Amino acid sequence: MDTTADAGSGARAGRREWLGLAVLALPTLLLSLDLSVLYLALPHLSADLGATGTEQLWITDIYGFLIAGFLVTMGTLGDRVGRKRLLMIGGVAFAFASVLAAFSVNPEMLIASRALMGIAGATLMPSTLALISNMFTDPKQQGTAIGVWMACFMGGMALGPVFGGALLDAFWWGSVFLLAVPVMLALVVFGPALLPEYRDENAGKLDLASVALSLATILPVIYGLKELAKLEVGVVSIGAIVVGLLVGVVFVKRQRSLENPLLDLRLFNNKTFTAAIAITTAGGIMSGSYLLINLYLQTVEGLSPLQAALWLLPSAATTVVSVMVAPMIARKIRPGFAIAGGLVAVAAGYVLITFVDGPGGLAIVVAGLVLSAAGAGPMGSLGTGLVFSSVPMEKMGSASSLSETGGEFGIAMGVATMGVIGTAVYRGEMTDAAIPAGVPAEAAEAARESIAGAAAAAQSIAGSAGEGLLAVARTAFSNSLSVTVTVSASMALLLAIVAATVLRHAPATGAGDGEAPEGAEAPEETKEEAAVPAG
Image (cartoon, rainbow, N blue to C red):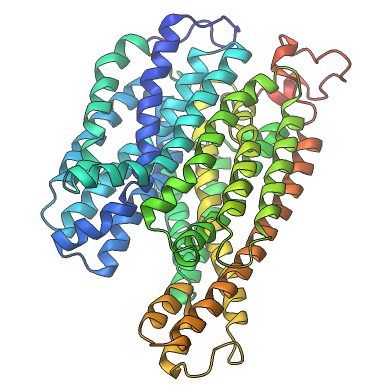
């Protein structure tokens, strides 16, 4: 099997590599789009298939759930069997599963199809990112390529509801799944000619026991965090997290004892790699505030899901621009400082949103989101670039899967954490003294549970009492939003300090082959620290 002979030489990419990047960008956009495209289609398919509430949750969650669970396994598998080969297999499997999902005749078939899509998606995500490292070895070009990849990934998340709304206006709910067919067809047709093959010839056999332990670690933790995000705090959610962490200890011990581990823990000996992964994970936690921001737009401002998605487009567009511009900034400024500066802007955007105190704050929210989006780009694209630059070529699949798994964990933990904080503040505000007179006890209890419950209860109460209840609930929810974005702003400032200190030695990409830019101190990391043995 062919490998990239000049990997790491810094040779500049040509037209073939840039065309190959376009081929890789399409499935990346599709995979992230599929994470959010069901938000609007769910009511339609649920009515058509007769899905229960529990089945609806599984339809939406199982896709991202299994992507997160299989990322580490598939990233390492790509290093062993070949990244292009795994990408082609995953593309065919994803298209097949998407067709099954589009023509599902009952909820069980749709859930199974979405599960297959998640497993196939886990083969695609680390392979696309790792192949970029093979195709673009020049630091400047690699930064631009990573920016394109990250822009597609983050843009797809924002565009999912918009695409879903447009398709549902013209077609039936299955059309949102059939988007995958032409995209994966292009990947399978053009990929073999445009994409290089790369694998670790010394990787050894895949340890199936480690695969099982990996899944038994990641899946229970992700499940527990998702349950906590729904405020299902109980034996099942907490127990799942505890079980996952305990199995994780066994997994780590096994990896340390194997000559060819599934996950080479020596990657974490490099402080640049470790810091970049940590910032990615913590950034996901920080972004958990977007849950409450979306709820604010729909429950306080009264926007429909599609209207809310359209108002989020300015921040999505800003994110794409920021991600693309970040590599250019890193040619003049050290990545650690660029990331730190961006995180300060993220914090400023969150602080701006704290000024919202009820309905009428739409402009403030959109402005705060745009400011935060402008600062988020360096963390995404430059953080990923630092992960690449700090590991050997044969470990790129494992490194990219770790980066993406960290992001998945961070997002799940962020939604759970910010959801719990926001709900606690909201319920603390909805005291008996705050509930207007004349509100029935049952309606008051529903209003204390959530802002959605308050909106439903207010509609059932005639006169000023209902209007008063909704006004109090909206104010309480706005206050809970202010608290959560304050927590996110504090996290952003803390991460800025980490980036500016721990990552300060990473050179600007415009400095040449590892040379520091003029007037800057040389990196302290030695070649021995940066190079991790292939294991």
